[in-house]
Image (tube, rainbow, N blue to C red; front, side, top):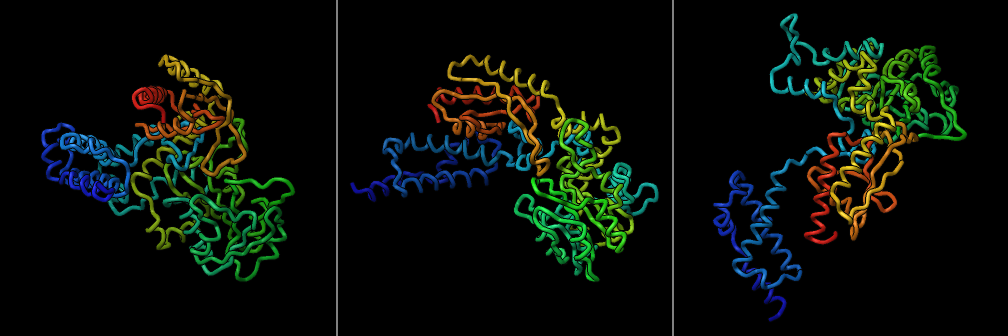
Amino acid sequence: MSICEKQQALLRKLPGVDIILAKIQDDNDFFQIPKSVLVNSIRSVIEGLRTAIVGGQEISEKNFSESLEINSIVEKLKIWVNQVMTLNLRPVINATGVVVHTNLGRSLLSTDAVDHILSVSGRYSNLEFDLSTGKRGIRYSCVEDILCEISGAEAAMVVNNNAAAVLLCLDTIAKDHEVIVSRGELVEIGGSFRIPDVMAKSGAILKEVGTTNRTHLKDYENAIATSTGLLLKVHTSNYSVVGFTASVSLKDIVELGMRYQIPVMEDLGSGTFIDFSRYGLSKEPTVQESIAAGTDVVTFSGDKLLGGPQGGIIVGKKNILDKIKKNPLTRALRIDKLTLASLESTLRLYRDEEKAIQSIPTLRMLTTSFATIEKKAFILEKELKTLNDSRLRIYLKNLSSCVGGGALPLLGLPSKCVGIKVEEMTANHIETFMRMHTPAIIGRIEDDLFIMDLRTVEEDEIPAVTGAVADMLESVTNNGPG
C-alpha cells in the first residue's frame, strides 16, 4: 500500500463530530461544558489529527482501531476543552526577582485597593454624581484632592497611562508649537513607543537641543523662538548615561521658562512620592520635588514605583490643568471606576509613609531586608527537601533582584534565591514545565539552574512552588525527562 493510500485509509477512520458527541454524552467531565465549545473543540482535535496524517507524521495503524481511536480522541478532547475553558488572564507566581514586572502585570495592588475595587464594582457608585448637590459630578474629584495634598500641586487629573498623559498635555499646551527637549532625553519606553512619536501625534513640533551625553542651559535658551510653546524635561528612568555627561537641572529650566514666560513640563516616567535614598536605594526624583521646583505640569505612571493601578497622573498649575481637562481627548483617555477605586485607596496610604511602605506590595518588596528574603529562601529549601527525591538538587544563591518597570536600571537589589536542578532534565525543560504549570511559576535560568528569587515570592505562595516541583518530579517518573 502506497503512502497516499495509507493516509486515505487513516483519514476514513477519523470519526465524525456526532459520533464523538454521542460517545461523551454520559461523561461527567463534559457535563458543564457548553455544546458550542464541545463541537468546536471536537472539530479542532479532529482537524489536528487530520493535519498530522496528511503531513506524513508516523501514526500507528493500531492506534486507529475503532475502540482506541475514539478513546484516544476523547482524552485529547478533555485536554483541549480544559484549555478552552480556562481563563486566559490568570494569576502567576513571580519568581524572577523583577519587582515591577511589565509582562506580569507590573505592580501588585494593596489589600486596601483590592477591597475598595470589590466594594465599588458590585454596586452603583457616585462615579460622576455629586452627593452634596445631587447634580452631575466629575470623576477625577475623588482623587484630585488627595493627589494635590501629597504632591503639593494646585490641580490634578488621571488618564489611562503615562503615554496618554504626555500626549494629552502636549496636545493641549503645545500643539502646532515647538517643544524644546534635550536630545539625551528622547526616551523609548516599552512597546517601541518613543517621545518623538508621541510628540508628533500630539501635533507639537520637536526641537532637539544639546547632544546625547551633554546638554547645557544655553542650548535651551538659544533654541527659544516665537514658535516655542513648551520646555520639556524627561526623566531617563529606564536607562542611564554615564561618563562625560552634563544635563540641566529642572530648577534652571523652570527659571528659564519663567524668564521667557514659557511653560515647563516634566515627564517623570516611573514617578514616586517616596525618597528611596532613605531606604538605602538610589535617589529618584520625587513628584513633590518637581512641583516644589515650580514645574507647570508633571506626568508620571500609577502602576510602577507608585504601586497602584495603571494610570497616567497629571499634576501641576490649575490654569494649565483646567485647559487639559477641557481637551476632547480627555474623554477618550479617561479611566474607569475600578482604576479610580484602586488609585484612591493606594494614594490614601501615602498619608503615612511607614504604612505605605508596609501596605503597598511594590514598596514593601523594594525595601524589604535581605534577612527577610533569606528566611523565605530557607523555608522553600526546607519544603523542597521534604519531597525526598534524590533526583532533585537544591542550591541557595546570593544573587540580585531588580526594580523593573523602567525604573532605577542600574540598581541591583541583593537577594536570596533558590536554584534547582533535576537529573536528566535541562534547565530549559524545568523552566518550561514550571511556566506551563497551574499556577505558573515564572523564574529565570542562570548557570544551568532554574532560579527562583524569593524577593518577589510571597510566603503564602511557597507551598504552591513546592507543589509545582513535586508535580514535575512525578511527571518525569511517569513520562520521562523533557
